[in-house]
Image 1 (cartoon, helix red, strand yellow):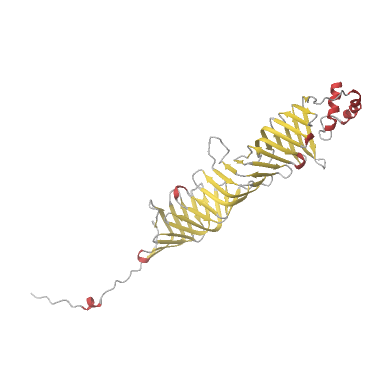
Image 2: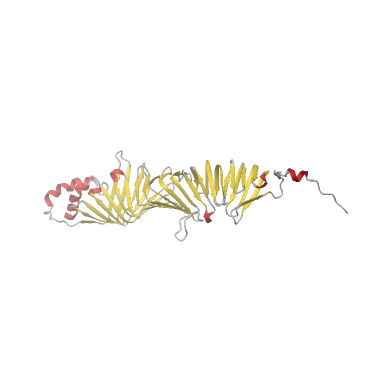
Length: 400
Protein backbone atom coordinates (compact mmCIF):
# COMPACT_ATOMS: atom_id res chain seq x y z
CA UNK A 1 0.00 0.00 0.00
CA UNK A 2 2.89 2.38 0.78
CA UNK A 3 4.27 1.86 -2.73
CA UNK A 4 0.96 2.92 -4.27
CA UNK A 5 0.72 5.90 -1.92
CA UNK A 6 4.26 7.03 -2.71
CA UNK A 7 3.58 6.68 -6.43
CA UNK A 8 0.41 8.77 -6.27
CA UNK A 9 2.04 11.40 -4.04
CA UNK A 10 4.83 11.88 -6.52
CA UNK A 11 2.32 12.02 -9.37
CA UNK A 12 0.10 14.62 -7.71
CA UNK A 13 2.07 17.37 -9.46
CA UNK A 14 1.25 15.75 -12.82
CA UNK A 15 -2.48 15.59 -12.22
CA UNK A 16 -3.51 18.75 -14.16
CA UNK A 17 -2.03 17.26 -17.34
CA UNK A 18 -2.49 13.53 -16.91
CA UNK A 19 -6.23 13.34 -16.45
CA UNK A 20 -7.61 9.86 -16.95
CA UNK A 21 -4.63 8.06 -15.41
CA UNK A 22 -6.07 8.06 -11.88
CA UNK A 23 -9.48 9.11 -10.54
CA UNK A 24 -9.94 12.39 -8.68
CA UNK A 25 -11.29 10.65 -5.55
CA UNK A 26 -8.26 8.43 -5.14
CA UNK A 27 -5.93 11.41 -5.45
CA UNK A 28 -7.74 13.30 -2.62
CA UNK A 29 -7.66 10.28 -0.32
CA UNK A 30 -3.99 9.58 -0.74
CA UNK A 31 -2.70 13.16 -0.49
CA UNK A 32 -3.48 13.08 3.26
CA UNK A 33 -1.14 10.12 3.68
CA UNK A 34 1.67 11.72 1.74
CA UNK A 35 2.75 13.89 4.67
CA UNK A 36 2.60 10.97 7.15
CA UNK A 37 4.28 8.12 5.31
CA UNK A 38 6.60 9.74 2.77
CA UNK A 39 10.22 8.66 3.33
CA UNK A 40 13.06 11.20 3.03
CA UNK A 41 13.61 12.21 -0.58
CA UNK A 42 16.99 11.20 -1.94
CA UNK A 43 18.99 13.45 -4.25
CA UNK A 44 18.47 11.19 -7.27
CA UNK A 45 15.25 9.23 -6.85
CA UNK A 46 14.89 6.23 -9.14
CA UNK A 47 12.37 6.61 -11.99
CA UNK A 48 8.87 5.21 -11.56
CA UNK A 49 8.01 2.33 -13.88
CA UNK A 50 4.42 1.88 -15.09
CA UNK A 51 2.94 -1.11 -16.78
CA UNK A 52 0.82 1.24 -18.87
CA UNK A 53 0.46 4.95 -19.53
CA UNK A 54 -2.69 6.71 -20.68
CA UNK A 55 -2.50 10.46 -21.40
CA UNK A 56 -5.27 12.60 -22.85
CA UNK A 57 -5.79 16.25 -23.56
CA UNK A 58 -8.91 18.33 -24.14
CA UNK A 59 -9.29 21.71 -25.77
CA UNK A 60 -10.44 24.81 -23.90
CA UNK A 61 -14.06 24.22 -25.00
CA UNK A 62 -14.00 20.65 -23.69
CA UNK A 63 -13.61 18.91 -27.05
CA UNK A 64 -11.22 15.97 -27.21
CA UNK A 65 -7.81 16.99 -28.51
CA UNK A 66 -5.57 13.90 -28.37
CA UNK A 67 -4.92 10.60 -26.58
CA UNK A 68 -1.57 8.85 -26.13
CA UNK A 69 -1.03 5.38 -24.71
CA UNK A 70 1.97 3.18 -23.99
CA UNK A 71 2.32 -0.39 -22.63
CA UNK A 72 5.35 0.64 -20.55
CA UNK A 73 6.64 3.99 -19.29
CA UNK A 74 9.17 5.46 -16.82
CA UNK A 75 8.78 8.77 -15.00
CA UNK A 76 11.76 10.79 -13.74
CA UNK A 77 10.56 12.95 -10.86
CA UNK A 78 13.48 15.41 -10.87
CA UNK A 79 13.21 16.29 -14.58
CA UNK A 80 9.42 15.69 -14.83
CA UNK A 81 10.07 13.50 -17.85
CA UNK A 82 8.17 10.44 -19.03
CA UNK A 83 9.82 7.93 -21.36
CA UNK A 84 7.44 5.47 -23.00
CA UNK A 85 7.85 2.47 -25.30
CA UNK A 86 5.71 1.80 -28.39
CA UNK A 87 3.44 4.83 -27.91
CA UNK A 88 0.26 5.12 -29.98
CA UNK A 89 -2.60 7.57 -29.97
CA UNK A 90 -5.35 9.46 -31.75
CA UNK A 91 -5.74 13.11 -32.75
CA UNK A 92 -9.30 14.48 -32.84
CA UNK A 93 -11.16 17.09 -34.87
CA UNK A 94 -14.60 18.13 -33.63
CA UNK A 95 -14.53 15.18 -31.20
CA UNK A 96 -14.04 12.72 -34.07
CA UNK A 97 -10.86 10.67 -34.66
CA UNK A 98 -8.89 12.36 -37.46
CA UNK A 99 -5.33 10.95 -37.25
CA UNK A 100 -3.65 7.91 -35.75
CA UNK A 101 -0.10 8.35 -34.45
CA UNK A 102 2.54 5.81 -33.41
CA UNK A 103 6.30 5.48 -32.86
CA UNK A 104 8.89 3.27 -31.17
CA UNK A 105 9.72 5.68 -28.32
CA UNK A 106 8.16 8.77 -26.74
CA UNK A 107 9.61 11.36 -24.37
CA UNK A 108 7.09 13.58 -22.58
CA UNK A 109 8.81 16.70 -21.20
CA UNK A 110 7.61 19.09 -18.48
CA UNK A 111 4.47 17.07 -17.81
CA UNK A 112 3.26 17.27 -21.41
CA UNK A 113 4.47 20.67 -22.60
CA UNK A 114 6.58 18.95 -25.27
CA UNK A 115 6.43 15.39 -26.67
CA UNK A 116 9.21 13.88 -28.77
CA UNK A 117 8.48 10.71 -30.75
CA UNK A 118 11.33 8.70 -32.25
CA UNK A 119 11.71 5.72 -34.56
CA UNK A 120 9.33 4.71 -37.35
CA UNK A 121 6.99 7.70 -36.89
CA UNK A 122 3.58 7.24 -38.51
CA UNK A 123 0.92 9.96 -38.57
CA UNK A 124 -1.99 8.50 -40.56
CA UNK A 125 -4.96 10.52 -41.79
CA UNK A 126 -8.10 8.47 -41.11
CA UNK A 127 -10.40 10.02 -43.72
CA UNK A 128 -10.38 11.90 -47.04
CA UNK A 129 -7.16 11.07 -48.95
CA UNK A 130 -5.65 9.08 -46.04
CA UNK A 131 -2.32 10.91 -46.24
CA UNK A 132 0.45 9.21 -44.25
CA UNK A 133 3.26 11.34 -42.74
CA UNK A 134 6.41 9.48 -41.77
CA UNK A 135 9.91 10.07 -40.39
CA UNK A 136 12.44 9.17 -37.71
CA UNK A 137 11.71 11.98 -35.26
CA UNK A 138 8.66 14.12 -34.49
CA UNK A 139 8.64 17.08 -32.08
CA UNK A 140 5.11 17.78 -30.84
CA UNK A 141 3.99 20.98 -29.09
CA UNK A 142 0.40 20.24 -27.98
CA UNK A 143 -0.37 23.84 -26.94
CA UNK A 144 0.23 24.96 -30.55
CA UNK A 145 -1.25 21.80 -32.18
CA UNK A 146 2.10 21.67 -34.00
CA UNK A 147 4.16 18.65 -35.06
CA UNK A 148 7.56 18.92 -36.74
CA UNK A 149 9.15 15.93 -38.48
CA UNK A 150 12.83 16.83 -38.87
CA UNK A 151 14.47 13.50 -39.66
CA UNK A 152 13.74 11.78 -43.00
CA UNK A 153 10.31 13.44 -43.35
CA UNK A 154 7.92 12.05 -45.95
CA UNK A 155 4.21 12.35 -46.81
CA UNK A 156 2.40 9.74 -48.94
CA UNK A 157 -1.00 9.34 -50.53
CA UNK A 158 -2.37 6.70 -52.90
CA UNK A 159 -0.30 7.80 -55.93
CA UNK A 160 2.47 10.07 -54.71
CA UNK A 161 5.28 10.60 -52.22
CA UNK A 162 6.52 13.98 -50.97
CA UNK A 163 10.06 14.33 -49.58
CA UNK A 164 11.28 17.53 -47.91
CA UNK A 165 13.90 18.87 -45.51
CA UNK A 166 11.27 19.57 -42.82
CA UNK A 167 7.56 18.82 -42.47
CA UNK A 168 5.44 20.85 -40.05
CA UNK A 169 1.86 19.74 -39.44
CA UNK A 170 -0.78 21.91 -37.73
CA UNK A 171 -3.43 19.56 -36.40
CA UNK A 172 -6.34 21.98 -35.96
CA UNK A 173 -5.82 23.60 -39.40
CA UNK A 174 -5.08 20.35 -41.23
CA UNK A 175 -2.17 22.23 -42.78
CA UNK A 176 1.12 20.64 -43.84
CA UNK A 177 4.06 23.01 -44.39
CA UNK A 178 7.14 21.65 -46.17
CA UNK A 179 10.57 23.24 -46.33
CA UNK A 180 12.63 22.56 -49.41
CA UNK A 181 14.31 21.36 -51.33
CA UNK A 182 11.19 19.29 -52.00
CA UNK A 183 10.54 16.34 -54.30
CA UNK A 184 7.02 15.23 -55.23
CA UNK A 185 7.09 11.86 -56.98
CA UNK A 186 3.95 10.56 -58.71
CA UNK A 187 3.13 7.12 -60.06
CA UNK A 188 0.40 6.09 -62.48
CA UNK A 189 -1.18 3.66 -60.01
CA UNK A 190 0.56 3.42 -56.65
CA UNK A 191 4.11 4.04 -55.39
CA UNK A 192 6.46 1.13 -56.01
CA UNK A 193 10.11 0.93 -54.94
CA UNK A 194 11.20 -1.06 -58.00
CA UNK A 195 9.48 1.29 -60.46
CA UNK A 196 10.49 4.80 -61.49
CA UNK A 197 7.87 7.47 -60.81
CA UNK A 198 6.00 8.77 -63.82
CA UNK A 199 6.82 12.34 -62.78
CA UNK A 200 9.27 13.84 -60.29
CA UNK A 201 8.57 17.50 -59.39
CA UNK A 202 11.34 19.47 -57.68
CA UNK A 203 10.37 22.65 -55.80
CA UNK A 204 11.14 24.86 -52.80
CA UNK A 205 9.04 25.61 -49.70
CA UNK A 206 5.29 25.15 -49.82
CA UNK A 207 2.00 24.31 -48.11
CA UNK A 208 -0.55 21.54 -48.52
CA UNK A 209 -3.98 21.62 -46.87
CA UNK A 210 -5.00 18.03 -46.20
CA UNK A 211 -8.69 18.98 -45.87
CA UNK A 212 -9.47 21.04 -48.98
CA UNK A 213 -6.50 19.79 -51.05
CA UNK A 214 -4.97 23.20 -51.88
CA UNK A 215 -1.27 22.99 -52.74
CA UNK A 216 1.28 25.80 -53.20
CA UNK A 217 5.03 25.58 -53.78
CA UNK A 218 7.72 28.15 -54.45
CA UNK A 219 10.05 27.80 -57.39
CA UNK A 220 12.04 27.25 -59.29
CA UNK A 221 9.91 24.28 -60.38
CA UNK A 222 11.26 21.41 -62.46
CA UNK A 223 9.21 18.37 -63.43
CA UNK A 224 10.93 15.38 -65.04
CA UNK A 225 8.77 12.87 -66.89
CA UNK A 226 9.83 9.24 -67.20
CA UNK A 227 9.94 9.44 -71.03
CA UNK A 228 12.48 12.26 -71.01
CA UNK A 229 10.27 15.36 -71.16
CA UNK A 230 11.24 18.17 -68.79
CA UNK A 231 9.04 21.04 -67.64
CA UNK A 232 10.04 24.18 -65.73
CA UNK A 233 7.99 27.01 -64.15
CA UNK A 234 8.38 29.87 -61.69
CA UNK A 235 6.08 28.32 -59.04
CA UNK A 236 3.03 26.06 -58.76
CA UNK A 237 -0.48 26.16 -57.33
CA UNK A 238 -3.04 23.39 -57.41
CA UNK A 239 -5.55 21.17 -55.68
CA UNK A 240 -4.93 17.49 -55.01
CA UNK A 241 -8.62 16.78 -54.39
CA UNK A 242 -9.49 18.09 -57.87
CA UNK A 243 -6.43 16.53 -59.49
CA UNK A 244 -4.64 19.50 -61.06
CA UNK A 245 -1.55 21.67 -60.69
CA UNK A 246 -1.14 25.14 -62.21
CA UNK A 247 2.41 25.77 -63.41
CA UNK A 248 2.91 29.54 -63.22
CA UNK A 249 4.58 31.38 -66.13
CA UNK A 250 7.08 31.41 -67.58
CA UNK A 251 6.63 27.75 -68.47
CA UNK A 252 8.99 25.75 -70.67
CA UNK A 253 8.49 22.18 -71.89
CA UNK A 254 11.51 20.44 -73.37
CA UNK A 255 10.73 17.48 -75.62
CA UNK A 256 12.89 14.34 -75.64
CA UNK A 257 15.51 13.52 -78.26
CA UNK A 258 16.12 17.23 -78.93
CA UNK A 259 12.88 17.55 -80.90
CA UNK A 260 12.33 21.02 -79.52
CA UNK A 261 10.76 22.94 -76.68
CA UNK A 262 7.59 24.91 -75.97
CA UNK A 263 7.59 28.31 -74.23
CA UNK A 264 4.22 29.20 -72.74
CA UNK A 265 2.28 31.08 -70.10
CA UNK A 266 0.58 29.59 -67.05
CA UNK A 267 -0.29 25.96 -67.77
CA UNK A 268 -2.70 23.63 -66.00
CA UNK A 269 -1.60 20.02 -65.53
CA UNK A 270 -4.33 17.41 -64.96
CA UNK A 271 -1.93 14.78 -63.67
CA UNK A 272 -4.49 11.97 -63.36
CA UNK A 273 -5.50 12.48 -67.01
CA UNK A 274 -1.88 13.16 -68.06
CA UNK A 275 -2.87 16.34 -69.89
CA UNK A 276 -1.48 19.87 -69.91
CA UNK A 277 -3.42 22.83 -71.28
CA UNK A 278 -3.03 26.58 -71.54
CA UNK A 279 -5.04 29.47 -72.97
CA UNK A 280 -2.00 31.72 -73.26
CA UNK A 281 -0.03 32.35 -76.44
CA UNK A 282 2.81 29.86 -76.90
CA UNK A 283 5.88 29.61 -79.07
CA UNK A 284 7.51 26.30 -79.95
CA UNK A 285 11.08 26.12 -81.21
CA UNK A 286 12.43 23.19 -83.22
CA UNK A 287 15.72 22.41 -84.86
CA UNK A 288 14.63 23.82 -88.22
CA UNK A 289 11.58 25.90 -87.53
CA UNK A 290 9.10 27.21 -85.00
CA UNK A 291 5.38 27.26 -84.29
CA UNK A 292 2.97 29.49 -82.38
CA UNK A 293 -0.71 29.71 -81.49
CA UNK A 294 -3.29 30.79 -78.98
CA UNK A 295 -3.15 28.10 -76.32
CA UNK A 296 -2.25 24.43 -76.53
CA UNK A 297 -3.24 20.98 -75.26
CA UNK A 298 -0.65 18.28 -74.58
CA UNK A 299 -2.02 14.74 -74.29
CA UNK A 300 0.76 12.60 -72.84
CA UNK A 301 -1.19 9.37 -73.37
CA UNK A 302 -1.71 10.11 -77.08
CA UNK A 303 1.77 11.67 -77.55
CA UNK A 304 0.24 14.74 -79.19
CA UNK A 305 0.44 18.52 -79.00
CA UNK A 306 -2.62 20.43 -80.25
CA UNK A 307 -2.76 24.14 -81.08
CA UNK A 308 -6.54 24.74 -81.18
CA UNK A 309 -6.51 28.35 -82.41
CA UNK A 310 -4.51 30.53 -84.83
CA UNK A 311 -1.84 27.97 -85.60
CA UNK A 312 1.35 29.17 -87.31
CA UNK A 313 4.23 27.02 -88.55
CA UNK A 314 7.46 28.40 -90.03
CA UNK A 315 10.51 26.65 -91.46
CA UNK A 316 13.13 27.52 -94.05
CA UNK A 317 11.33 28.32 -97.31
CA UNK A 318 7.80 27.63 -96.00
CA UNK A 319 5.12 29.20 -93.80
CA UNK A 320 1.79 27.65 -92.87
CA UNK A 321 -1.25 29.02 -91.08
CA UNK A 322 -4.45 27.22 -90.08
CA UNK A 323 -7.23 27.31 -87.54
CA UNK A 324 -5.91 24.19 -85.78
CA UNK A 325 -2.75 22.09 -85.81
CA UNK A 326 -1.66 18.86 -84.14
CA UNK A 327 1.67 17.09 -83.85
CA UNK A 328 2.36 13.52 -82.75
CA UNK A 329 5.94 13.53 -81.43
CA UNK A 330 6.12 9.74 -81.59
CA UNK A 331 5.16 9.37 -85.27
CA UNK A 332 6.21 12.92 -86.32
CA UNK A 333 2.89 13.37 -88.15
CA UNK A 334 1.62 16.97 -88.36
CA UNK A 335 -1.99 17.81 -89.32
CA UNK A 336 -3.33 21.28 -90.13
CA UNK A 337 -7.11 21.89 -90.25
CA UNK A 338 -9.37 24.77 -91.26
CA UNK A 339 -8.55 27.50 -93.83
CA UNK A 340 -5.09 26.08 -94.34
CA UNK A 341 -2.67 28.22 -96.32
CA UNK A 342 0.83 27.01 -97.17
CA UNK A 343 3.27 29.48 -98.74
CA UNK A 344 6.50 28.36 -100.35
CA UNK A 345 9.18 30.89 -101.18
CA UNK A 346 10.26 28.85 -104.18
CA UNK A 347 8.21 30.07 -107.18
CA UNK A 348 6.00 32.08 -104.76
CA UNK A 349 3.69 29.04 -104.54
CA UNK A 350 0.52 29.29 -102.39
CA UNK A 351 -1.50 26.16 -101.55
CA UNK A 352 -4.93 26.36 -99.89
CA UNK A 353 -6.99 23.49 -98.47
CA UNK A 354 -9.25 22.54 -95.60
CA UNK A 355 -6.75 19.97 -94.39
CA UNK A 356 -3.09 19.21 -94.98
CA UNK A 357 -1.01 16.39 -93.55
CA UNK A 358 2.74 16.27 -93.26
CA UNK A 359 5.64 14.49 -91.62
CA UNK A 360 8.92 15.62 -90.12
CA UNK A 361 11.82 14.04 -91.94
CA UNK A 362 15.20 12.98 -90.65
CA UNK A 363 16.56 16.35 -91.72
CA UNK A 364 14.14 18.08 -89.34
CA UNK A 365 12.03 19.65 -92.11
CA UNK A 366 8.25 19.35 -92.36
CA UNK A 367 6.86 18.14 -95.69
CA UNK A 368 3.16 18.56 -96.44
CA UNK A 369 0.83 16.74 -98.80
CA UNK A 370 -2.91 16.28 -99.19
CA UNK A 371 -3.52 12.65 -100.17
CA UNK A 372 -6.96 12.12 -101.70
CA UNK A 373 -8.00 15.75 -101.13
CA UNK A 374 -8.49 18.73 -103.44
CA UNK A 375 -6.13 21.63 -103.04
CA UNK A 376 -5.79 24.93 -104.84
CA UNK A 377 -2.32 26.11 -105.73
CA UNK A 378 -1.07 29.19 -107.52
CA UNK A 379 2.42 29.79 -108.85
CA UNK A 380 3.78 33.15 -109.94
CA UNK A 381 6.45 32.97 -112.61
CA UNK A 382 8.80 35.89 -113.16
CA UNK A 383 9.30 37.15 -116.74
CA UNK A 384 12.82 36.59 -118.08
CA UNK A 385 14.46 39.81 -119.32
CA UNK A 386 14.98 39.91 -123.18
CA UNK A 387 17.43 42.29 -124.82
CA UNK A 388 15.99 44.49 -127.58
CA UNK A 389 18.87 43.82 -129.96
CA UNK A 390 18.09 40.09 -129.91
CA UNK A 391 14.35 40.71 -130.46
CA UNK A 392 14.84 42.87 -133.57
CA UNK A 393 17.58 40.82 -135.12
CA UNK A 394 16.58 39.42 -138.62
CA UNK A 395 18.01 36.02 -139.54
CA UNK A 396 20.31 35.94 -142.57
CA UNK A 397 18.86 34.65 -145.85
CA UNK A 398 19.45 31.03 -146.77
CA UNK A 399 21.18 30.31 -150.03
CA UNK A 400 21.38 27.09 -152.01
